[in-house]
Image (cartoon, rainbow, N blue to C red; front, side, top):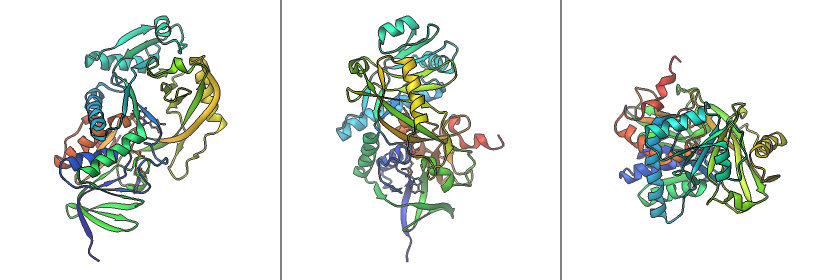
Length: 378
Ligand SMILES: Cc1cc2nc3c(=O)[nH]c(=O)nc-3n(C[C@H](O)[C@H](O)[C@H](O)COP(=O)(O)OP(=O)(O)OC[C@H]3O[C@@H](n4cnc5c(N)ncnc54)[C@H](O)[C@@H]3O)c2cc1C
């Protein structure tokens, strides 16, 4: 049988693969996207109702231009798809003045001239009456932050990519992606495909698919909980921002305004058990709920301990929690790997897609912060 041939294969259609497919399609490359399940499935990292997008980026100032690029791209996708995807609610970081969250958010805001305000605890609680914080906490508030409607956004990315010439095959598991004579051969459950190049965006499955890749990824289980609000109007997106709170213990939590005028989604950032996508406990247990309830009781007197909904999602972490975006190895530039988004990648989807397409066109390009070879010999 003759092997099928395409220009570029994208493996995985979570937010990163879907974004890359769209950028490649917009450049006229007619890419083929392969996904083992279906767009929007709940087994990886991109499912669920919402994701935070924020600009005063505490993790590193180099992310700021990328989130601004992605913000524009999300707005453009809203216009082309006709679907609302991004609600601007403002964003609030809460912690001690010397916490990583506060110091980092201020550093990015100042370096990139982002509009922001620093609030003392009493001013913070007057402005956002749903919050109860400690007297020595402070807040950094920025107006240009909000909520991305996650599953709809991923669906819109795939639809837009197809409109621009991409092809998609769902229910197709890739077994191996191997370099061959300057090109790539992709072996799937249903046959093999020859391509000029490939992008692997396999999320928590990356290690399993590319064991030879030199990035020590760790998959982490994350439980997310929706609690009922006593006074839903306090949590309305018009008056309640997306937020993160770093507590004195070092634990960080985050959450959203109420999108259904009844319940509020919140979760701990990191601190989950190490796992794999095939072994992970998908059920949210009493221990998970207790963590969420204790945080809510400390921070939001207006939330009830009643759990309305819960879900499990996976983080794929690098050791320094910065992304790993680059070639499979320096001598295989035709295979680009996008992984290690460490629980904060969603908002950047379209910018990562652009970086992936650039890496295929111009090997060696891309932000230094994300270079996968930083772990070699580390
Ligand atoms: C609870 C939670 C909250 C988060 N909150 C935020 C937030 O507020 N803001 C933010 O910016 N980010 C957030 N993130 C992080 C963000 O969602 C992830 O960084 C992002 O979704 C990663 O996308 P991905 O495409 O790399 O991975 P995935 O979404 O896991 O996609 C990988 C895809 O590849 C497919 N695949 C894998 N192997 C194969 C194979 N062999 N063959 C075919 N297909 C394959 C999988 O089925 C999957 O669809 C959060 C994540 C979680 C879990």
